[in-house]
Image 1: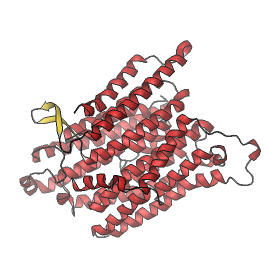
Image 2: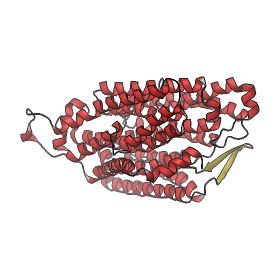
Image 3: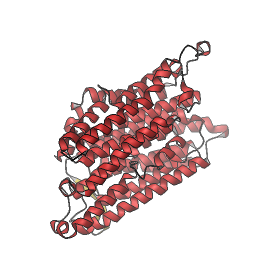
Image 4: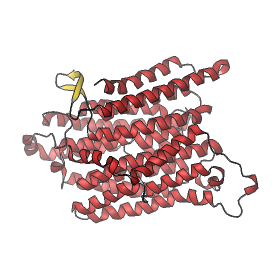
Length: 497
């Protein structure tokens, strides 16, 4: 109980402390001293938060949970750690400190650093609460708070473009959340409990009497929560938000925050039950939307010249790989979806941090400007290349393992048309992924004979930037080399045991 509460409320309290203590921007005669103190405190808070979250995972007792308080007599704020929440929490425990320490150097020339770190810590606590939520009401409460705590990171620069992107993110997220709230109301009326369960929580009498309406409810909830995951047709906020946010914030947004939409869809499917949804129009339409998003996101990324926006469209595509694996509703495809949660998280965080390092050291934001960047920043571009291979799905990276299971699960599902169409679209998307990621490697390391080698200068970033990138890149390969390390956890998530 206590590690869970500390992992949630300690970073929230720490974030509020930074927002209040440093409400005046750091500048002037005592700026250097104040900044060192701010970074020291933030670093300590991030490490302690990760330690509390790790302790929560290590001391979890299976199905044991606890009620914090009651909203009403029948709606408790309830926390419990299960295997699915553990997987998502593990991703957050690793990515958030890496991106946080990276930002210590990246944000050096930005204004309002204290505000950034304050909301970053608030976000850490909310993410932990989301992973450890034990029922749908608790999950929804922190799902809304996730939007409110992450929006300031999107509009951090305060420019008109950033402000409009932040408002767009808020509008889309709230619309999706309200659609989900509509579904929660009807679930509450047709379930004995809103506690998460893998076998379905609908009463048999409700399925008999209101089956058609409950299918509509399920679809509205999947569509609403899918907004956070960037699923078509409500994906437009994501490529708008990424280019204006600081690179470490984009890394967290792409690797972790959008996964809240994935976690939500897993919870929704668990509440309705796969037996209720499988073979219905809901499954058919949902699979269609995920495959459209996979192909569309890859194609738009291939055509996009701005590096961070290219990665944003890539996120739109890759998140729907995961949603496709869930929508197929087969054990093998679900295993692939959960594998891709980790694989994509580590890879995309590494790619955004590599992009941030390049932008920070060179000021270049467009792909065509980065010819020869491998000569100036070889370590950064090697990490970019290895992470790119993971996103494409080349062995021995984690991306290969996850996409193998996704394709195999689709073929095994026996779904008419989609059992073959799914793997075909995933393969086409993988080729497009190679087309929009590897040109940076090719032109970066082999700029051609007309490149000005005489004016070449090494621009590799400092260790605060390179070490987090290296950690995430290595992890993206390790989960492919040693998939058995997480296989047992994923098996528990799939089987519910």
